[in-house]
Length: 324
Image 1 (cartoon, helix red, strand yellow):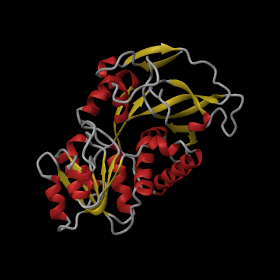
Image 2: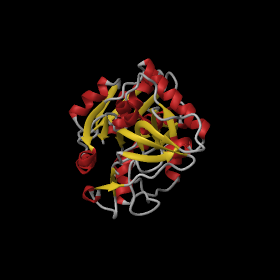
Image 3: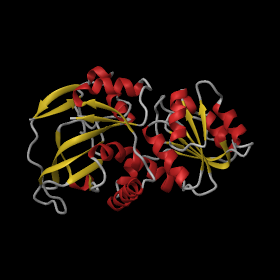
Image 4: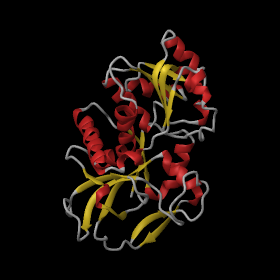
């Protein structure tokens, strides 16, 4: 038996229930892992509320974790009991132990802890595809990163700076402004006390940005478009404040022949070769010290509802992990 978080009906954090569930032997292409750390992400709240539909009800949320292989299916190759592994993808992470397709797993380098691996798979791979695949950031670019003190934001800031970009970050408090600066943002804007579009124009002396990375959503749109130079790219990758509502596509023409896209991590990692290449780049950046993965909050799995409240209340910084 394993302690597993289950959701039987959509709603607030109170719908997250801890239950004892039997973990069967792994299927032919599956692996059983004993989880040591589980990553908490905003996408978990989307599944909890029903913004993103779960494949069935009840279900176990969570899309990333790390642990030790305890059993492998008959058709699995390349993995064995005792291996240290991490994953992002399939739902079901909020559990002490679980079965997962072997294809979802990557081995954790010796220098990387379980907590770091669990905290960085979804957010780190998101940063990878945003910076290297959606809009290829290069030296000389100016980038705007919303929620720059959050889990994905801190990674985007560090990585974009290492690529030679000028990094402008937005945050919601003076404390978060200090964090964004700490992780390398050249300029930080508190969008609760400043007009961020006006400040971007001021900071760039009218030059504006090549790309905006927006995981906030409704609260920062369409003002994000005013931060872009002609032919700039608006990248929406999250909805922390609510979804961006339907808009007249002609707005992109009026704002300077802009590009707008809404990519997802899961489309990218649907290709096994792409997934492996992305993971190699991410682990390499961590091993070199290019990326530091800040884990600022830890919650026992039994306190998962409190973790969701903190996340949705904008009371977290960096990454948060659940400990089974």
